[in-house]
Length: 210
DNA sequence: TAGGCCATCTGGTCCT
DNA sequence: AGGACCAGATGGCCTA
Image 1: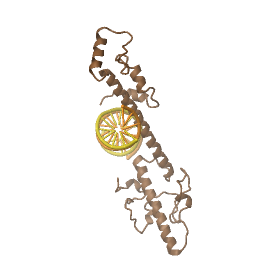
Image 2: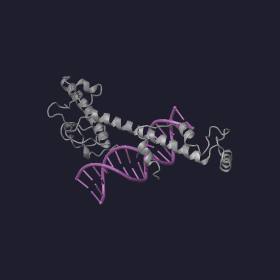
Image 3: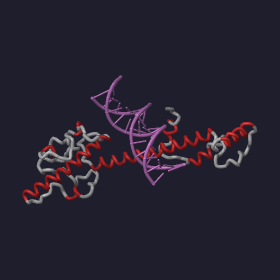
């Protein structure tokens, strides 16, 4: 709309130097503070001050300029909160990127890629567990395909604690990216893509749930 | 240069 | 009333 705040915002990213109270007190000297209608300005100008005071009494207790400044300050404060909120969101996304298996020599995942990859990854892990359970039930062998550390807490960022070993054969350290839609809860019985096809294909992944 | 991604601003809505 | 959350708009940066 207007670029009034563009300069201000670039300078107010790191901190918000003053509060609403400070603003209403400090920058509203032209318009008298709303908190003290009975206390006139120290140097009463004859005509304009009287008119402003009349305006104040007529209105809701605040002059137009005061309302504008208060609005502007609220907006700046809201901008600051929104900025921090988005920073927190980005921090959480970074933490998620750190937990996910890293691409081999690839650029940082975008936001949407991170979310989709995490979705696929969780789904693939759960599939692995499911298959492991099935196989364990068949053979009576309780061999786990994933280390218990992978099943319990979150792996430390960048660690290999959850190295991909869905079958133990052709795993390498590559993550699994399901190119098919993992949104479907019913996974196909043939889970070979967990080791192969699912890898590196998620950028073309068309999610069904987004 | 077009398109994708991102950061930020902004106004609206909901919640406490 | 104020804060959190959300979605749309906008402009900058980067890459194919």
